[in-house]
Image (tube, rainbow over all chains, first blue to last red; front, side, top):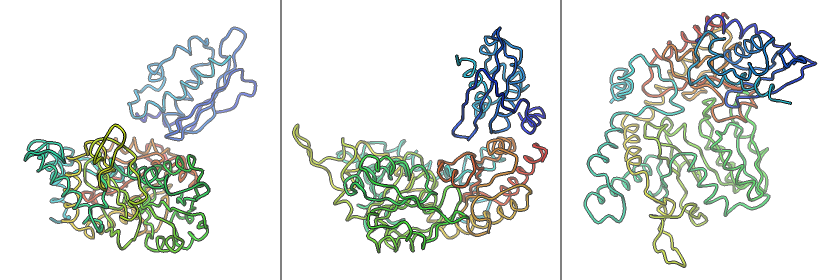
Length: 119
Length: 406
């Protein structure tokens, strides 16, 4: 499960910054493990994601997933990102995450979905 | 029976089934020796029937076994009488029973309950719920910097309004042992009643409730080599006068009319419904198992492993022991963090090496906040653990650091 991709992204995350002019933001947390993520999305006039980032703390799975989601979401339509499921996350991570840790990978997905559903 | 590696591990069929497992999560639940499983199976296979009031041989046998189990528990903690032993479903149930059955009728608005910040949620949430209901106040006892409780510190928290101290015997996060005797003496001198959470201590520290002179003491079966679903509440007999049943139903009554119910004698009036019969029998067998091994032998075995583990972990770079760093101050529990690695990643990577530990807040969120950590990884020992388990953990942690390129 702990591939170089996951370890490297957890140590040097992508898009871990605040977008001041974000059009949509949303936060979420896994209370039991102390992970918390806030997503920033900048939508353009065509309802496409022109920029995406995150802030937060968490385990390697959570931070790597946040990195990859924010990276793959760029230039995608809102509808496409909203259609992502855990299968897409496994493809991004190039690994399947087992039942005991799936919550860590799904938190960033839930948070970006929450951001995109905000009016 | 001795604590030699070969003989003791033979008693635990789970370890025979998983010979490469390093089980370091006994603080969450201990493994069960075969004699406990056999005792419960014997009840189910040979004399499974309901207790009390059955006018046939099997029920009489079940009743005798269940009530003998109560006597075994009473003797184990040196209660004056088996009437002081209530069977519950676990420590949580036991503490809630004190909150709802006793404190709710004795404490009044403005009264204070002292709770150390170390407490497990099971010895905090019931008091918060009760305090809210009756208008009582919770006073939190802050430990010393290393997480230990100093008896002299209680003076800061005691007031004329203090009515109860609810305190753990061993912290389930730090593994520190509470100096109960001195603390209870101080509490008593101010007329404060004391409830002891003995969930982590009953299987390793001798408990004499008469010597401690505590008012209530709670523990679970499953952390003491017994089954899940059974716990014990010791109640100093005089407190029964102010204690009322929380659950009504079968078994706890003497007579019921459409207008009125009279209750059974203590402790039965606090055990509504069919009790955990097999579990009580299993618990009694577990306590006999502990007694046969000897608490002092168990304690010195676990202490040696804990001290070895502290020594091994302390030399690994980037590791931080939570609580006292010194040897001898941990009772079979060690919590730690590794710089740059989340506790859940540590636990998952250790699992890949067949090492079972726990990671998270360990049901102690206020303590975690006080410690300034989101989560810790916890290794805890039982009588079946060996030096091999300690070395496997140390190697496993080194592998975690390697995986994380530290």
